[in-house]
Length: 395
Image (cartoon, rainbow, N blue to C red):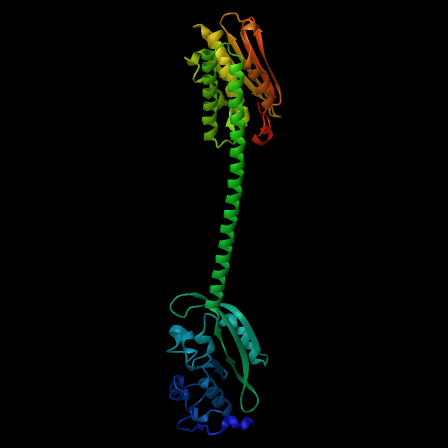
């Protein structure tokens, strides 16, 4: 089919002096009746064929278009471009580019000069801060500046075919932020899941250790007790000491405990007056396992002191001292004074095994009960450990 078929039977619009922009509604009448005679462009009847043609093309397009003409770059625009002007729409026609857009003139001047020199330019999503509606707003524009020639072949202006990309850019930024936020949430969820798994494993580890300690307390106490009543009392006391230590560790989420708090908590059930016990030692974090060990050791020592030693008489006294070295070594000592003489044979069984073998294992060290003339002395030497380092050591 020949190209001429496209023209067949079409109505022909003919521009005349009375109707220079036929079929162009919207800005067509505004441009036709504007007082161009008072501008550098001159009266409409004096316009060059080039200026008339550019104006007709612009007015006939549904694409937002504006162009600037003459030495002052006076502004022309079509109906589709009008919303882009905001509050300036009523006064922009026929005014210089720099006057209509003073807020962006410095930004686009290099592009304008390029087009006026004959080199067209195209920008993608150029950021421009505009004041179109009485306030500053961040906008983004995709546009092309193309030179316009007059009838003599001289560049007389430039045409702009803009696309307001602000919504697209902001939507993309919002989407990117949403994706980033979602990634952050997912990472937080993954971290939470990892923490939950760690806590579950930690809980299982703690329960196994606690059950092992309880099992050892019950079985060994039963084994070394003369009768059920004695065994019941000993088991009850040791489990109470274990429970107190558990309560203290629960307050610190089982991560570590301060040795000062461990000692104070372990002594409370056994000491009837604060002046009967002197406690001296620095604050230091110890592992959960070591805290249980010291609690159980102090329970054994205090129980025996009440039965046979310094706490069995009104004037008896207990001194507890410990030192922590720069390399985390520990020297922990229990000394009794003012009590009856105590012989080594008075203390045998699971209590001795607990204080002299099991507890020092938690500290990778050694311990022993000494029956000095002044009273019983218990010395524990070892290394303060992190909770991970203490794992694997059990009864």
